[in-house]
Image 1 (cartoon, rainbow, N blue to C red):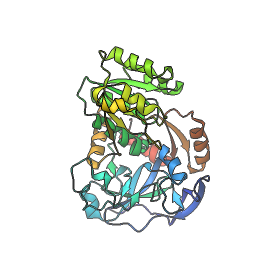
Image 2 (cartoon, rainbow, N blue to C red):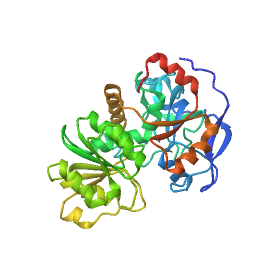
Image 3 (cartoon, rainbow, N blue to C red):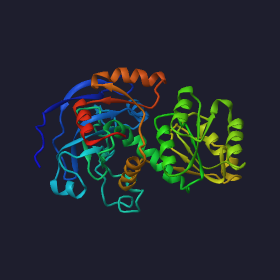
Image 4 (spheres, rainbow, N blue to C red):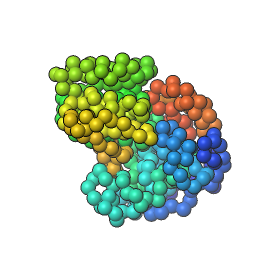
Length: 371
């Protein structure tokens, strides 16, 4: 299937020097596609906490680097029609961009059980981290890690789901809970948190949202937490409130999305004995008092985005239950500096995104995209 005419150059938001502001540049459109590659015309690109880490040089890698690893758009070219078709892609497919690009396909993680494939250490790189990302008019993605969008799921929701959604969806899966059991979410009113609340509810869990900001507490209430706990009252009060609704035991599992120095300890404290704490936030150090691990047998897990099949499961859950991402949209790549200012202000309620191509947003309305 022939695709639309693709220009030779495009606009992109790039890190030129670490610890310095972004620059908007004109760069070549990617043309060297491998058999499993997709060229995606970006509709929406989202900002994530990881973007600031990339900008600070935490992950290293060559510069200049086009920012954003969270994107959605439409496939306009494929590396190989045969390989792409096998994976469910062709020109015109609406897609949530995959983050790993070029997994080796042969290591223990790639060939191991589902849920480990995203841990391949021999990838070409991570989109928006080591490889040019989604704050651009076009992005190169991998069909093996990208996810087709159901007609009901919008580009606006799909972009932040590419990392935030995939990450917190897998965190809910890693909690390994049954319907009716209690899960607590620390940092419930943030970009990942409000999605985690909805995913947990979609899986039939009872949810305790814990946050320390007025905006976060309000978003926690809005997105259906059964119990809302204000972390500013302190750990002892938070534990007391959680135990009051869980028969004195605590949550069966807790997901920590906050990088506050005391957040991991709080997450363990509100968890029942022998329960699980899933650590998602990425502070420099994770601090947990030893009695939580030794005397209370709290099991701590880390988690990294989703495998491809887990990502497809997330999309199915969204289509069935109407999960939506709270976004603060900015129109056009030129608005990147306004976006950064808002993010740094700490006043973002949900996820800050850039609408790169408004025409795609208008076109998808004909499909019935509503989530």
